[in-house]
Image: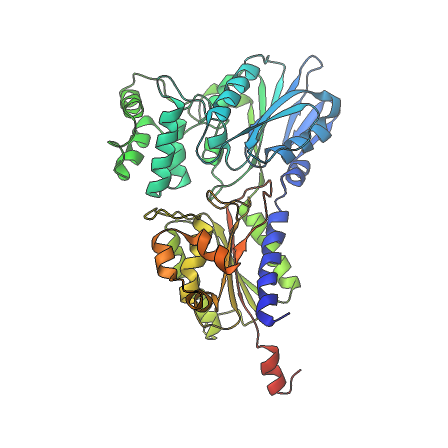
Length: 456
């Protein structure tokens, strides 16, 4: 195995170590336990009534393993459950029903699932407990549009916001004001039952009101904020009329606001964060250390435009290569978060593949440098790849094959670029999601160089 091939495999192993540390099943088991008639959720103790029932609901890419863990913990105490997952994320369960739906743009299956969930929550009583499981993708998987907004209207809004480069907080601000379950709506539907929510964060900074659009968290945003997001991206005239009129009328007080943090319904709600991007980065750093790399963590909350983020990372790598910045090679630089891409072309790809392609030019010709960018959920954008891997030979190999990296970048076609080079990062669905993880490796001196110096 060549030094470069080994370095690329090290990058993959470090990435997978980070993903493994936020396994949804293990995250739930660490934070939830049943001790007699008390349900322990994080630091909260929830007494269980002898007459009470325990329901499980939820949505997100990590829903199946999270539900499996809850079934294992609760055993016979579990009464009934319904969790919505992304297509292809099913798993065998005993009492919890799993329904599949689309992500990132909601579909009819998600709409039907949300109706079923609202019906189930409508049967709860004050002595019952609802365990809610949330993970990345939950906003799209559980669409429950307000009247008179249709599913197709919400689909159009989602596509417009994604294409404009809106971040997840901005997208979810709009979604919450067009939904019956988001922005505290699920807690309202479950009231007066006690609600315990276990949350796997896919949002920078882990704001509970943003993750899966905060279905069990008071919403601090208002109709005016949602309108402000559309105005910021010049989309107010582009969104369906039903959306524009509903938000404008809501801002005038003609429709009820989402429940706010001081609403009494949240006095019986417990929200527990069970997995984060920072946890994944820490595990990746530990793996890098085991492989002999000195490690530096840039940040777990990298946001903004993907190509702008690339420049920050390239600057760090170049400084390490030049010996102007620690750590000394062999070095590993890690970062997390979630960047955005403004779509200008008609190609296929995702923010991680675009990151790797944009970075490839910046490391052209550099020896022993590898940059991996991947989504911890195993799916980057509308593709079957988690991301991609670039190295100092990427652009040279592409040019030799008659491919112009800049043309692929301009067309947002990073998937086909890396597919042709055999450098896509394909993991399959990981059943977790804590945003993205980037691994940048600068190898030590090559074996050939050490031989020339008589060092090995």
